[in-house]
Amino acid sequence: MRELALIQPGRTLEGLTAREEEKARAHREFEERLAECGPLAFRVAQGVLRNAADAEDVAQEALLRAYRHFTRLREPTRFRGWLVRIAFRLALDRWRVAKRREKRETEWVQPEQRSGAPTAEDLAAASEFQKRLERAMEELPEKFRLVLLLSAIEGYTLEEVAGMLGIPIGTVKSRLFFARKQLAEKLR
Amino acid sequence: MKCEQYQREIGDALAGGEAVRSAELAAHLRSCRSCREFHEAQRQLLGAIETGVRTMVNEAVPASLLRSVRAQMEAAPVGRISRRAAWRMAVVTVAVLAVTFSVMRHRREPNLARTNPGGPSLPGAAAVAAGPNTPGTGQMVVQKKQTVSRKAAAPSLEPSLGQRMEVIVLPEEREAFAKFVAELPKAKKATAGLTRPASEPENAPVEIALLHIQELKLELLEPSEEK
Image 1 (spheres, chains in turn red, orange):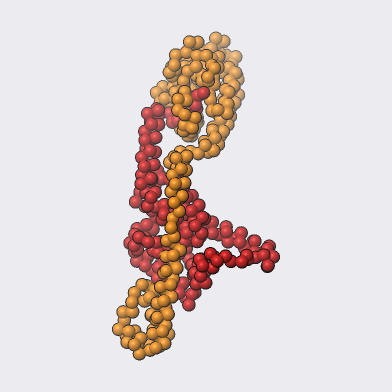
Image 2: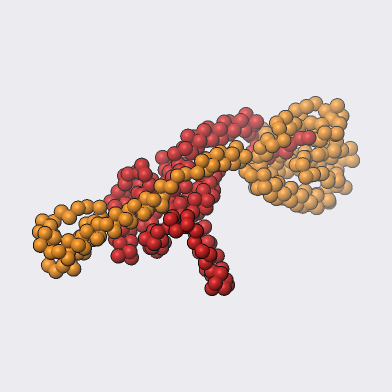
């Protein structure tokens, strides 16, 4: 069996080997970032979706997307911010789809079937305040919400959040201020 | 200043993560019970928001996350085209080649009558054949060295491009195929192929790319007995 490979004229198999080496190097570099950035992607997704299983799916997808396009990233220092944005966007998309589905189902399901009896676990996990907070957060503008989530993740300072998003620290602080203020007004 | 204004100032200070710093406000707080209560309520509310958001985002990361990402990374290494995409591109490439062949054949029909029946030999061009059971198989390498540009008859050329991504050119069709390749530089964009023995495992990468060809040469890497 012979294999057909399409290559650019003038290129040799040595050229292909060099490309393989480059890929291997990119693989190693990505692997080095994975341990730190994997949890970050999960936490951003968790902040939006508030469901560990969904957040894991989204984080996984975000990491794989980042991996597939890793060689196109011109500035490796921007990797975290890039990944955070991918994870945030994917999580928002999934959240919107879930909301639409939930709305459709609520419209069609009979009132007595709408809500099952909450389990003891549900009651323990979601306090009334937490539910209100989640709803209030959903209404925040995306840029405020992302800053609020990132600044709440353990181990990240505001300077790091600013670096991650490529915005000045003053902008981070002001977004955080408006996010808190809006939440406080809604939850008062 | 009214209590309402003081309370707005309190709200702003706490939302900004700062303590009340204004001396005037501090003095008012000492004297106004209502604003003191507001300050305390607001401080607790913002504290609860902070705690709520932290709880939301600092949940334990599932151990399976990195494991499954690593497993999928192995399955689809960085920058590699997925098998599905590779097949899609292969189908498009084959379609482009088929159209090019048919157009070229159609254009050359009038030239057939004027050409030497024995068929001219093409300097620098070699036979191309690939396939497990084809005698005298050779490898075709496209290199940027020399252009084969002699006009020749184009005998019936029906390349067999099977689903296993092979280029099979019969000995009697080699000349025509070489001529086709010689024509490629005239096209602004075209595709060309390299056949080589599949020494790698079955799941070895298949690189496919659209090409911009400038000059081409055919070389026989493995001498053919039929030459």
